[in-house]
Amino acid sequence: MQPQDGKEVSGDEANGSIYQGGESENMEEVSGESGSPSSGETDQGIEPEKNFFIIAGSFRHLQNASDLQDRLKARGYPAEILITENRMYRVSVSSYATKPEAEKALAGIKADRGLEASWLLSN
Image (cartoon, helix red, strand yellow):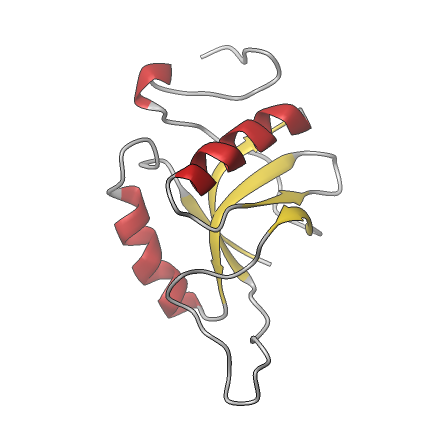
């Protein structure tokens, strides 16, 4: 499907499915919170570094990413926006410290309407 307003989409827009493409190198958080409802702090009160991100969408324009982030936060997800070195804005549904934890969460997130095309990114 052709991009609309700079966002890459596939499937039925009403369904909320979002296609994301591009490279996954050198991303940094630009807004939002990191963490997830299921992840907690360590005994010392320091949260482990989270290197696994469940991505719901990738956009050329920050406003499109912000809109998706707002919708995800309204649904209770700790969504954050990551930026790639080639200025793509990726929306992370949540992030995790370990791959098994992220893979388990991904299966549940993909069962949620509109997030079927979500995928796992390791940083």
